[in-house]
Figure (spheres, rainbow, N blue to C red):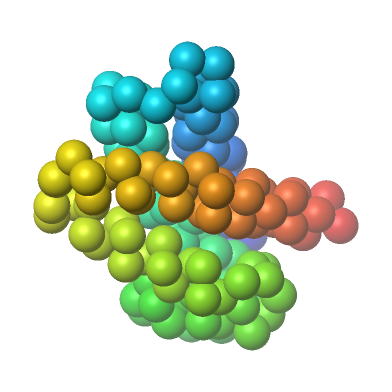
Length: 135
């Protein structure tokens, strides 16, 4: 796997992360409403997909083959790309549920988890990968 591939995927990840952070900033300013919940969940689904695929590409560049999101998360934890493997597994499960189910109460609980639990981890991944890129 070429170094270029993970770097290109990382650029896309950063753009998606900007989108979810911008959505969060609107929520901080205006409060959580139905439209913002839907936007936050959609942004989360997109950024999560790019997160695990970026980690997969980086790990493959380092010679570590992974096939599934769960396997990628486990290897990312073992190789210090992420610090909270359990949180990332929770993110994977939340992403799987949000793409198949929509109930307002469930959506609100996922939005709360995204804001308080997942967003810090997604931002930490950007910091770690940026260090790898520049290091």
